[in-house]
Image (cartoon, rainbow, N blue to C red):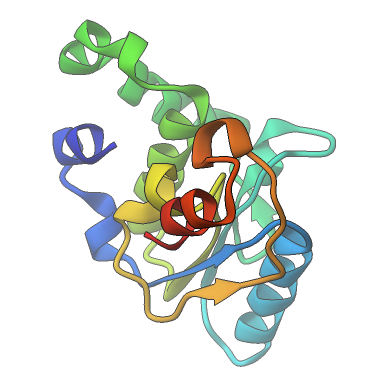
Length: 160
Protein backbone atom coordinates (compact mmCIF):
# COMPACT_ATOMS: atom_id res chain seq x y z
CA UNK A 1 0.00 0.00 0.00
CA UNK A 2 2.99 2.35 0.30
CA UNK A 3 2.99 2.81 -3.47
CA UNK A 4 -0.75 3.50 -3.46
CA UNK A 5 -0.52 5.97 -0.56
CA UNK A 6 2.37 7.76 -2.27
CA UNK A 7 0.22 8.30 -5.38
CA UNK A 8 -2.20 10.23 -3.17
CA UNK A 9 0.32 12.27 -1.21
CA UNK A 10 0.76 9.90 1.76
CA UNK A 11 -2.35 11.05 3.64
CA UNK A 12 -1.57 8.72 6.55
CA UNK A 13 1.43 10.92 7.38
CA UNK A 14 -0.86 13.91 7.95
CA UNK A 15 -3.12 12.36 10.58
CA UNK A 16 -2.58 11.22 14.15
CA UNK A 17 -3.50 7.57 14.47
CA UNK A 18 -4.24 4.98 17.14
CA UNK A 19 -4.32 1.49 15.62
CA UNK A 20 -6.06 -1.33 17.45
CA UNK A 21 -4.89 -4.86 16.65
CA UNK A 22 -5.79 -8.28 17.98
CA UNK A 23 -8.09 -11.21 17.44
CA UNK A 24 -11.15 -10.31 19.46
CA UNK A 25 -12.73 -7.06 20.59
CA UNK A 26 -11.00 -4.65 18.22
CA UNK A 27 -14.21 -3.02 17.05
CA UNK A 28 -15.54 -2.47 20.57
CA UNK A 29 -12.21 -1.08 21.77
CA UNK A 30 -12.05 1.27 18.76
CA UNK A 31 -15.55 2.56 19.45
CA UNK A 32 -14.87 3.10 23.16
CA UNK A 33 -11.61 4.95 22.50
CA UNK A 34 -13.28 7.11 19.87
CA UNK A 35 -16.13 8.01 22.24
CA UNK A 36 -13.69 8.86 25.05
CA UNK A 37 -11.69 11.11 22.73
CA UNK A 38 -14.86 12.82 21.48
CA UNK A 39 -16.01 13.39 25.06
CA UNK A 40 -12.64 15.06 25.70
CA UNK A 41 -13.28 17.45 22.79
CA UNK A 42 -11.28 15.81 20.02
CA UNK A 43 -12.49 15.52 16.44
CA UNK A 44 -12.22 11.80 15.78
CA UNK A 45 -12.03 9.51 12.81
CA UNK A 46 -12.99 5.85 13.10
CA UNK A 47 -12.11 3.13 10.62
CA UNK A 48 -13.48 -0.34 11.29
CA UNK A 49 -14.41 -3.53 9.48
CA UNK A 50 -16.47 -5.37 8.72
CA UNK A 51 -19.59 -3.28 8.51
CA UNK A 52 -22.94 -4.43 9.89
CA UNK A 53 -25.51 -2.55 7.84
CA UNK A 54 -23.83 -0.25 5.32
CA UNK A 55 -20.31 0.04 4.00
CA UNK A 56 -20.30 3.73 4.98
CA UNK A 57 -20.19 2.85 8.70
CA UNK A 58 -16.58 1.70 8.22
CA UNK A 59 -15.43 5.32 7.85
CA UNK A 60 -16.76 7.84 10.38
CA UNK A 61 -15.94 11.29 11.67
CA UNK A 62 -17.35 12.21 15.08
CA UNK A 63 -19.80 9.33 14.85
CA UNK A 64 -21.14 10.29 11.42
CA UNK A 65 -20.75 7.88 8.53
CA UNK A 66 -19.05 9.05 5.36
CA UNK A 67 -21.87 10.36 3.16
CA UNK A 68 -22.88 8.58 -0.03
CA UNK A 69 -21.63 11.51 -2.12
CA UNK A 70 -18.27 11.55 -0.30
CA UNK A 71 -17.98 7.77 -0.65
CA UNK A 72 -18.50 8.09 -4.40
CA UNK A 73 -16.03 11.00 -4.60
CA UNK A 74 -13.25 9.22 -2.70
CA UNK A 75 -13.70 5.78 -4.22
CA UNK A 76 -13.85 7.28 -7.72
CA UNK A 77 -10.69 9.33 -7.18
CA UNK A 78 -8.85 6.17 -6.14
CA UNK A 79 -10.25 3.78 -8.73
CA UNK A 80 -9.91 6.32 -11.57
CA UNK A 81 -6.19 6.86 -10.90
CA UNK A 82 -4.34 5.67 -14.05
CA UNK A 83 -1.29 4.46 -12.09
CA UNK A 84 -3.53 2.39 -9.85
CA UNK A 85 -5.51 0.91 -12.72
CA UNK A 86 -2.29 -0.47 -14.15
CA UNK A 87 -1.60 -2.27 -10.84
CA UNK A 88 -5.16 -2.93 -9.62
CA UNK A 89 -4.62 -6.69 -9.40
CA UNK A 90 -1.89 -6.09 -6.81
CA UNK A 91 -4.28 -4.40 -4.38
CA UNK A 92 -7.31 -5.68 -2.56
CA UNK A 93 -10.53 -4.27 -1.19
CA UNK A 94 -9.01 -3.56 2.24
CA UNK A 95 -6.11 -1.66 0.63
CA UNK A 96 -8.48 0.65 -1.25
CA UNK A 97 -10.84 1.22 1.68
CA UNK A 98 -7.95 1.89 4.06
CA UNK A 99 -6.51 4.48 1.68
CA UNK A 100 -9.98 6.00 1.35
CA UNK A 101 -10.21 6.36 5.13
CA UNK A 102 -6.79 8.04 5.32
CA UNK A 103 -7.76 10.52 2.59
CA UNK A 104 -11.10 11.24 4.23
CA UNK A 105 -9.62 11.75 7.70
CA UNK A 106 -6.92 14.03 6.32
CA UNK A 107 -9.44 16.15 4.43
CA UNK A 108 -11.78 16.33 7.43
CA UNK A 109 -8.82 17.39 9.59
CA UNK A 110 -9.49 14.94 12.40
CA UNK A 111 -7.44 15.34 15.56
CA UNK A 112 -6.99 11.60 15.83
CA UNK A 113 -8.10 8.57 13.81
CA UNK A 114 -8.72 5.26 15.55
CA UNK A 115 -7.87 2.52 13.07
CA UNK A 116 -8.96 -1.10 13.39
CA UNK A 117 -6.27 -3.22 11.77
CA UNK A 118 -6.95 -6.11 9.44
CA UNK A 119 -4.87 -9.24 9.88
CA UNK A 120 -2.26 -7.25 11.77
CA UNK A 121 1.50 -7.25 11.64
CA UNK A 122 3.74 -7.57 8.64
CA UNK A 123 1.00 -8.13 6.05
CA UNK A 124 -1.51 -5.58 7.27
CA UNK A 125 -2.39 -2.62 5.08
CA UNK A 126 -2.58 -0.32 8.10
CA UNK A 127 1.04 -0.95 9.11
CA UNK A 128 2.22 2.05 7.07
CA UNK A 129 1.04 4.46 9.77
CA UNK A 130 3.29 5.97 12.42
CA UNK A 131 0.93 5.81 15.41
CA UNK A 132 0.76 7.92 18.54
CA UNK A 133 0.07 4.71 20.43
CA UNK A 134 -0.69 1.12 19.40
CA UNK A 135 -3.25 -0.98 21.21
CA UNK A 136 -3.32 -4.77 21.11
CA UNK A 137 -6.27 -6.81 22.34
CA UNK A 138 -6.01 -10.54 22.98
CA UNK A 139 -4.32 -12.50 20.22
CA UNK A 140 -5.32 -15.90 18.94
CA UNK A 141 -4.30 -18.08 16.02
CA UNK A 142 -6.30 -16.80 13.08
CA UNK A 143 -5.07 -16.04 9.55
CA UNK A 144 -2.58 -18.92 9.98
CA UNK A 145 -2.59 -19.45 6.22
CA UNK A 146 -0.97 -16.03 5.87
CA UNK A 147 0.85 -15.44 9.15
CA UNK A 148 2.12 -18.97 9.73
CA UNK A 149 0.94 -21.98 11.70
CA UNK A 150 3.64 -22.23 14.34
CA UNK A 151 4.02 -19.97 17.36
CA UNK A 152 7.36 -18.63 16.08
CA UNK A 153 6.16 -17.90 12.55
CA UNK A 154 2.88 -16.41 13.72
CA UNK A 155 4.31 -14.12 16.38
CA UNK A 156 7.13 -13.05 14.09
CA UNK A 157 4.71 -11.94 11.35
CA UNK A 158 2.15 -10.50 13.77
CA UNK A 159 4.69 -8.46 15.72
CA UNK A 160 6.35 -6.76 12.74
